[in-house]
Structures are given as structure tokens and as C-alpha cells.
Image 1 (tube, rainbow, N blue to C red):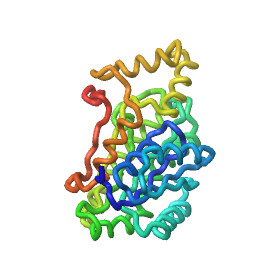
Image 2: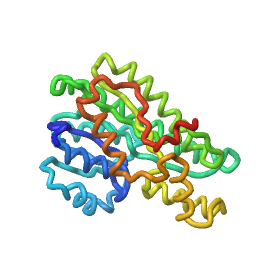
Image 3: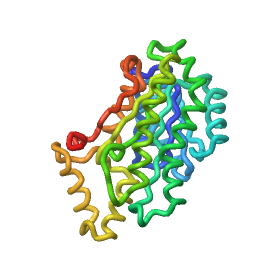
Image 4: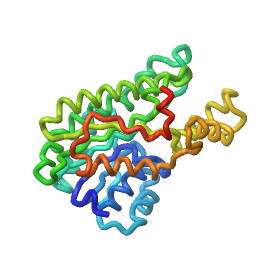
Length: 271
């Protein structure tokens, strides 16, 4: 307990029950965060998410703000509101994601641009908007500020039927490395986490698409097949992944930047 004592975090993609963003918000508050500002383009589950992140009795503040992560103006608004309400930004978690299935032949340029905007451009905008505030975190915490990009195992695994998602996540990895070099002198750490098969709503929707395409007989068969891809033979839950975000957000990781943390059950060893 207390590994994030006094820190203020922004976590995008935290507007849907069962996703990684909600699990990260809950874990951050459980570890003593002063406040977590969750953002999403949807807010219809706000009350349910509020109850979930409050379930542990954490005293920190939580707010779910509406945000289009592809909008520079929205990023400025979220950053300014966070500082106005809580006085600081110490951690940025770029977690929002979008997947539109299809290979090159099936994917329109508009759909590719939509996926790139959410999975890559939004990281650029978030870093740009929050870095000036994150730089001052070194005055409060020895580990400085922390930016964590959720990039998925898709960033290093080729896939002929989901071109936009995999290419955008790979681009996010290079952005992470470049940002680590640029912002290191300001004591801002920039790292990426690459979850493997994690049972989130977006994954289950993707599996349903694969079933519809005839790749598997059922979503249960698809889940079992994906889990079997790693040596552990099991899938991860969002709560499992949240622990990795806590570490990189904490001062325990004060000498970790530009790193790729594979949280994939060793699927990555095959690539």
C-alpha cells in the first residue's frame, strides 16, 4: 500500500466496465494516489465505474471526464482541468484503444486513419499536453513524472487480418522510445506495457468478429485457443495487468525509461 501516495494520474480509456483502464484506476487509488482522472468518449457507465473504483475504500479522488483522445483541444482541456482541480499531474496512462478488423484489402483508408488516430496520434497529443505538468513531478517525487503507453502484444506480432491495430501499436512503440529520449532530461520516464491475451470487452468483441468470419466455432473456443498460445496456458485479467502499471507509475521504477514491459505470458518469446 502507498506506492503512489500523493500522485495524480490521468488514465484514458477508463469508461467501460471490465477494461484495463478501470482496473488501473482502481489499482492506483488502492496504492494511495491522490486522484485519478479517468477519461473516455463514453460516460454512460460512470456510476458503475465510480462504485468499482471506490470498492476498496480508497480515500483518493476519482472523476470520469468525457474526452476525444484524438482532439488536441480536448487534451488541453483535460490537462488544464486536472491541474485546476488537483494541482498537479504526475502520471499519464495512454490506454484508450480502437480496433477495426481487416487486412489491407478489406480496410479503407478512413478506417486505417481512425485506428491510427486513437492508437498512435492520441499518445502524441497526450504527451504533448501533459509533459509540461509532468516535468514538475520531480519536485514532489524522486522518481519524477511517468508516462505509460498501453501498446499490446500487437506491437510486435504480425497479423494479416487486423492491419490497423497492429501497425498503430507498433508505431506507438517507436513513439515511446523517442519520447523517452526527449523527456528524460526533464525527469519524465516514458515506458510501454504490452499485454497479451487479456479478457477485456474489446478482445471479446474481436473474437466475436473472428467467429463470424469462420475462424473459430465459438467465442469460448477462440478464448481457449488464444490462451493456449502462451506457455502458461491461461489468459490474463485486467487486474493482473494493472499491477504492471502501478510499478511503472511508482518511484520504484525511477531508473526505468524507454522500456517495453511484456505482460503476455511469454507469447513474445516466439517473435
